[in-house]
Image (cartoon, rainbow, N blue to C red; front, side):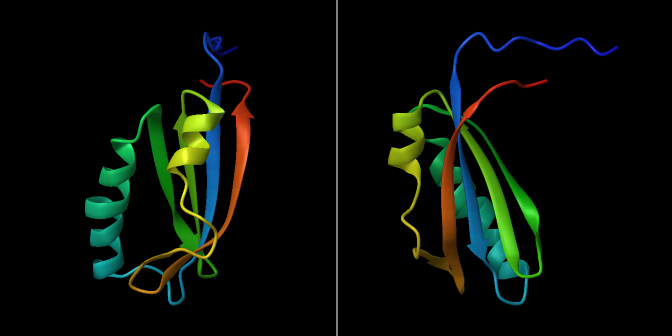
Amino acid sequence: RPHRRRIEEIMHAAIVRADIPGGTNEARLKNLREQVATGISGAPGFIAGYWCEPVDDQGLAFVVFQDGASAKAAAPPVGTDMGDGVTIASIEFREVLANA
């Protein structure tokens, strides 16, 4: 039975879905790595971020912050053009209940 680490502090996640027509390409990956991920990592309260491979032209990111206010402050508004045809489709904010 794996050992589960207890969350010592409450964390919050921004779950971001993006429209990515045509999926990834070199320009989009470069923008993600050099602009989006680098930019968000400097946001107040940032803990970690994970950007997943698009499926059916839909990207998914899970970005964790120290608190809900930091998550909401760092998240781009729905409809934001992230560059190279990528658009923010939806954002949900959730408290993180457990991690491993």
